Image 1 (spheres, rainbow, N blue to C red):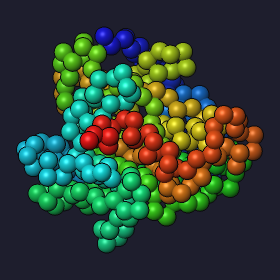
Image 2: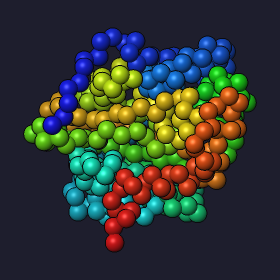
Image 3: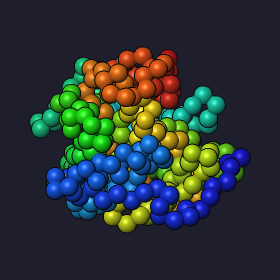
Image 4: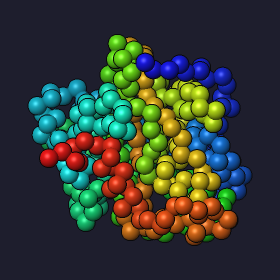
Length: 321
């Protein structure tokens, strides 16, 4: 049985932060401090002034719906690869051992260079699996990927400034990033909600930073510091950004990676555009690099090793024989 959720009491619960003056460099520190404060508290932020062209978002949504509405036999032609690229059908993700499989499907892609080639030197990156019957999808998807990546880089620059670090600290190794993007499709759940099945079960995100473009349907819920679920409904002209486990680990827990979930009670289909930002796989994640960060208990690791471990626990196809 799914527990209850409190309605969103006001728009100060999850702060709305305009990052324009951080993006253009005109007055970055007030934005940096606001991002810092929000990430120490709830770890979720509505970001306004993000700079992504609405046409890029609309084109990505149209291509995503065209893909998810395709015949399943066609979608199987681009079924998810060992490198976590392609279509992940309903039931392919389980957020923790005791959870039911998520009631969603996803299409996942990642970094590729200008001629369409992707590095294949790590278990979580390789060739993107573009559907041949939707020739525009790759351009639309990569347009969102690059735009979301730019937003994440601005935000991480703000976090570094607020922590009195060089503004490039979190991106010193980001030439061939492990970042992934996905179209995530949620059908209306109906009676599955009563049975305790989620669109996405409660979880924290694995990596550094997640940039989410919601549609107008709603269904995202966030666990606040009191352990109560609150709504994170769509807010016009914003993105939802949240801290992931890897950034929380790197900052010694100063920034909070917050549990969240999705329940589609709307009676409509729901679509999210998601960018999960991560730097190059060899990036060392060690809170001792940050003055004043708590480094008790968390051994240094690399971005690549940490994500391989987390993906192996969450995605059944990676451990299936």
